[in-house]
Image 1 (tube, rainbow, N blue to C red):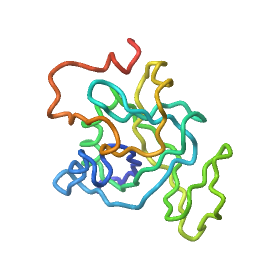
Image 2: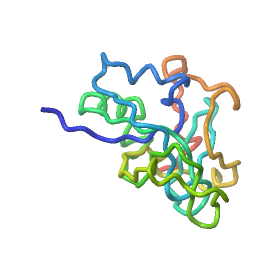
Image 3: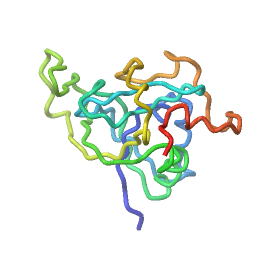
Length: 174
């Protein structure tokens, strides 16, 4: 039997976004668990000539990013790892996130004045894809709380990109 993994998606894999189709049943199991937010602040930026959303592994900076949580099997996790070019471009790590229908609650004084709906919140450890070895100048970009391709420059899907390797635009050379 395949192991089940929780994955937090914050960019083009969310419902209504260009890569959501990768979560179809032909690729494995992907059960939507709910809307979610990270419990700690991280920088979410849009960068590169392809306008890709990247989450930077700099805890305490940025915003409490909103996204969705899915429970996926090994086959689907492999598809996601391949899409995200894990571990070359992105690195997958486990971080806590909160599945909730309630108001945003975030550490470091970014709390909503409304009280959380405790009966609707669930704290989960989820796998998340961080940009590996990011360039420091990405920290000077605008930090997003939530990604929506319709609000940003046009995202270029992986299958429409030229063979040009853009990794040097966002990653430090190893």
